Image (cartoon, rainbow, N blue to C red; front, side, top):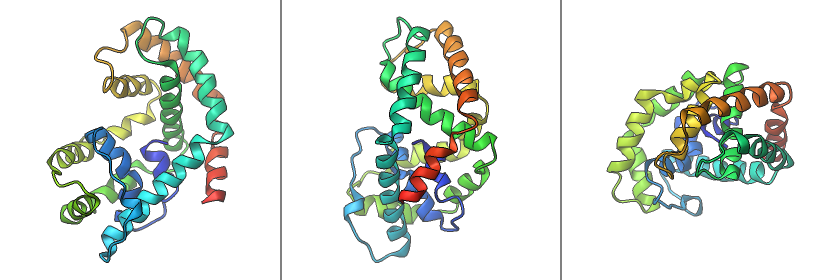
Length: 220
């Protein structure tokens, strides 16, 4: 699941460090894909760091339930098949595209149906003390944190997740994600065709997308 879908499960918490922990695995992966940490195996006496560890564990648990669900298997497969002709000639693997597109559509639907507040999400991130975050990262085995904090500050200031409310921005977000692996993944024509597929599929999902969130919530 993507950032806002993870946030959904803790949208009512007042604990900013727990919220940060639920998205830290993806933040770190976006900052530097070579970073591999396993704080879920650790314990710490500082409450803030302990809360980030608990949030990290929650992230792993949610992803495990999501990626093994019938919803994910069926929906990502359907999107893969629909997107394959739309990106003919692109180096991007259709399975990867179907997976990421599904996660972005879920984030879009959470925003546009009022299930979560993007402002509240960013307010949680802004409420976390950098020294506590750095101590968590150091404790988890990451000593050079400069690259992460450069990305994190930009992530907060750009508020890029707000654009997910616009369905036509999902294709742009897909391109940005794919550009981490492929230099020039899509032509303008690809993006137009992807937008058509994503918009149509989002409309089809709109009335029953909460089923996966309800399913996971029962298991947590």
